Length: 305
Image (cartoon, rainbow, N blue to C red; front, side, top):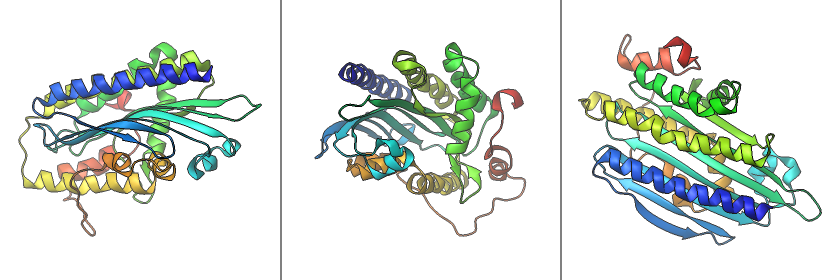
């Protein structure tokens, strides 16, 4: 059974990577993704695709990976102690887009499947995933659209999923050391297996398929907005928060590094440029200050905007 599950999920993930790359190339209009295939010494491998210096995307990466091994990494057994002593398969697609124009938000999406097995025991498996948006100069219309697509994607599976996954996203992408959200959220879920394989897989696909629909209209609206050095400086400063989250809090980064994954692919999510400034305070009443006061906290975006 598990071979069939893995085959179905991997076929979907490879197709998703292809479709997202094609859509983003069309939206960018200039940049092309360059593929780097790799093998993991302990088992498995993947396809990393990176676009650099596009018309819209300063850098973006869309990675597919399927890794497996005899021993669970510490980050996974800490999260799920019952997995100790099992072998594992983990596959997923993960992406981060860093546009050059500060008015186009950074975006992230990920969908994944995990299965752990040992002899004389039922396999333990689950799906996870989500997508989230990190604007520097937020527009209410963009945020509402992003969350509406997320809401619509989950509606076929019940009213309760969007608020649950939206709250999970707000909690997961919380920078505890900064006391702020990474952005305006979206969806996040993990450990999804309660509804059986077919429906859980369908939920994961609905989330994966919704990303392009959520992000491309925002690119189209904002990509030609004029900006200057001030906006660019603020964008690079806020990109520093992205680096902080990925290196300090992100479980996926830790899992990848602990499983001996390919470091270049794991850190593909990093922005090409970022900066830090000691004691930075936005000018009172400015657009930069508005990001902090109005957007870097959990809100019911569909009701409030």
